[in-house]
Amino acid sequence: MISNQETLNLSPYMAIYDIVVPKDNMLRQINELVDFSFILEELKTKYCLDNGRKAIPPIRMFKYLLLKAIFDVSDVDLVERSRYDMSFKYFLNMAPEDDVIDSSTLTKFRRLRLKDVGLLDMLIKKTVEIALEKKIIKSNTIIVDATHTKARYNQKSPIEFLQEKSKNVRKAVYKIDESMKDKFPAKSTSNEVDDELAYCEKVIEAIENEPQISQVPAVKERLNTLKEIVGDTQHHLQYSVDSDARVGHKSADSSFFGYKTHIAMCDERIITAATVTTGEKSDGQYLQELIEKSKATGMKIDTVLGDAAYSGKDNLIYTNQEQIQLIAKLNPIVTTGGHAKEFDFNKDAGMFVCPAGHMATRKARTGKKGQKRNQTMTFYFDVEKCKTCPLREGCYKEGAKSKTYSVSIKSTEHVEQAAFQETEEFKRLARNRYKIEAKNSELKNPHGYDQAQSAGLFGMGIQAATTIFAVNLKRIIKLVNEKE
Image (cartoon, rainbow, N blue to C red; front, side, top):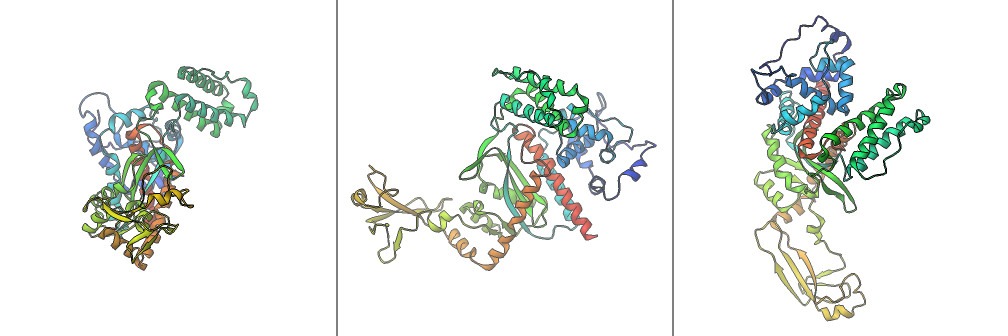
């Protein structure tokens, strides 16, 4: 059961906060900047309003998650710090003498109260509304990109993941006391998850029996992480194999296993839209969604910056219809045909000539007009000459019955974009794309967005929502302070 409104805290010790939490404290500034009552309005349908035990206020539970995103700590460490850190208690609207929640309550809150809430869009919209109200956002430009997040279990079996985390704990312990090797249990030699769990529990017990070691911060953090993972694996073994995570590619020879977050950010470096997908999804197909979501927050958009992934024909058509400048270079396959330059075009004959000097014998147009993909022109060569050509290696495949060379026929949209990307205006605007790379780095390094905290798209969505909300609030506070 929850009340329809937040209760007033009447503790006689509340004045302590005015002494120990200074005005420039980030958490105090966030409390003063944001009216969190919108969280209560959004979540009150998830609770009973007139029956049952009194629940922990939804706003406080949400703020716990926000603290987790800001400081990148485990649930256990978050709750422990909330016990003694007065800035945390102030932020959570707790009296100094109030006790904290059990860390397991956070898991229940995430899974039971935040389901089907649309948290990501709601929180981004709230921060953009605040920024517009404060007149911080002045540009009509957004920058788009996608950043990857590795799955929590990163394509490893439950046993491999448990082994990795228990090893991290042992290494931290050995730096303090190598004699602990004699107190740890023998490693499991079976391939059973239950045996590995039992081993990890014995490691945890052995460390906790040595308080002079277990309370060292470097050990304690790794120990809490291991305990959290053991708990997840015991009660939700299916999380050990992340069924939603997929293999994605950062480059031709670099891949990851996990998720992508497709992001739009205004020129003032405030994220205006985001969509979380599995790792294999291509970046370009989410451009329209990011633009529409950004508009829904109140943004006016006349320019979009992105890399070549966003310059597909459908995106060119869409941005043209919406009267939006798309600052995204065409894929080299479109501008060069994607082929080796040794094939020269003879303009007089209207045919391509191969590196050996043989001219194509005929050509044919393939594909339909008006489709998203461009039509192609295919040139056919005399295969009998190819069979005996001294340059056939890497050009002609032995046994092939034909030899062709195809080039993409540029659409009107591609021709116009190719000309636009050579202008000084395009080059000037394109220089600002670095800003979103810095934002991706900020999400990952201070806030732990490089690895998923839980399994599944649902968990990844909550992590995205709270992390982006925290990053946006920090940025807004900085810009507000600079104005004053």
